[in-house]
Amino acid sequence: MADDPTPLADLLAAGLDGGGDDLDRIAWPAAADRRDRFLTLHRIYALHTAPLAQVGEHVRWQHHPAVAALKNRLEAIWIAELDQGTRPLQDPERTEDEMRRLAARDRSPDIYRWIASHASWQEALHFLALEGGPDDVFDDLVAVCQVGLPLGSAKMELANNYWDEMGNGQFDKVHNVLYRRFVEAVDLPSIPLDGQPVEALERSAVLGLVASSRFLQPEMIGALGLIELEAGPHCRYVDRGLERLGASDEAREFYQMHAVVDPVHGQGWLRHGVGPLVADNPAWGPRILRGARWKSQVNNRFFRWAERTLVPVAA
Image (cartoon, rainbow, N blue to C red; front, side, top):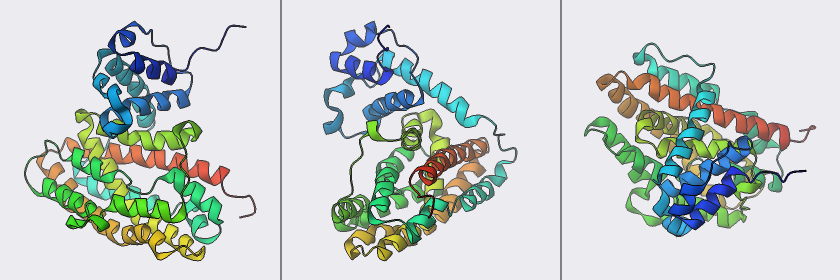
């Protein structure tokens, strides 16, 4: 029997280790399956958004023609999947209303209600380790999303959002610092990409998709806006679960804060961000909603997986 072909993600890793000449020589096969595809895309997105200390010398091949071609090929397949069965928004003036409707539909997934009322400590931590918090890297994403926006209401809204992510200048209030404090307080397990389900890989990869392409800036605005609209209710459920399970105040601070501020951020993102952008450029309306739909799709696939896999039948 012939040996199984090397997964695409492993070929890419070897090519990045070898450098430009090795990348030129690789005959890139199709991904073995969706898992292989998303693991490959995660490696590529890391070159665009991960800390330099993490990617090291590999970052110099971020825009190597072979890497760029592979990225474009895999993303074309994925975007076609994400768009399948959806119709573009016909009336840009309805962009804000449609985003609110989408967020309202996804506000209370069963998995979060289970976390609030039934999950054990270990079950809750396993889910939260895969969920990753509403904005573990949201500060970087908002920073990237501002690039090239015209001066005006939308850019100011995103700038204000970013400054709030930065704790309004107080280091101990920086949202990412609060999340790290939560991780330490509960000893949250770290689950490597190779150990995550496809649904979790896709959910996190979609932010790499929109953050690594200037062409997808409207879709990025929609995806990030949906995070802000949905995170508040989700965080309230998580905080109820943490309280029920006896978590410390330090462990709960991150989710308590987001339960309060994210609904405000979400409405501001729509009124002062999406609204003015679409008014100035109506062609962005359908694309902003498209990005929100992408985020909704991958969220719901992950939530359904969690409900099937993590929730006991008797819960």
